[in-house]
Length: 251
Image: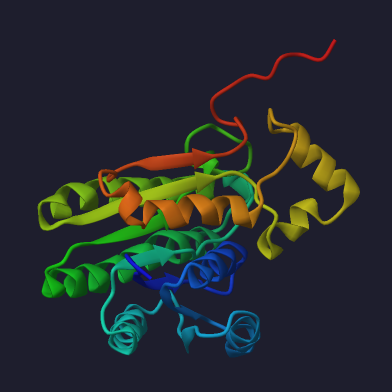
């Protein structure tokens, strides 16, 4: 198949990472990825044959560099990297202790930097450019109650994306991000697992629904493809209008 890519996904067993892996493999791309749980990786490999996977803690910078290097070698190079790693931490600032704050920053922001650094080195060594994609949140674009920690961490990811896009644009490396709102993944089950919680979440969105992993995966696949070769330094918001419009009142 023409224009096939070699793509590594950090957090490949998560809802968005797994949906993207499935789509990319179906399109004929070579896909590798890492996650913390060997059981989850095995389960995903059963559902999506052909994946190359490795266990790795995304908050361990040395392990991330080693893993990305090994996966790149297994694929014969890397054309795209997607960092589908994050958390949902919802507490007001006055109830957030130091350990929660640091863990949220480490998992969301530090892990992104730990992955970006080795990927950029490898892409520059190849000399053929590439594409990197990260995930922010709609809560970094509009104030939502109890999102102080996660909004700050993901806001840092957005700043990292724009700066890196500038630094490496002359070397043919594109860096972008997607900022979804609440999406139907295992991570969001504490919020949408009950009928009442799901209805509240839907009503927060002007379109009256929450996002699906496949929706996000579709945009992610486009952003790392050649079809988006003129796109870099952008934050694509996918939130059902949550951060940008006020819905028409129901009379």
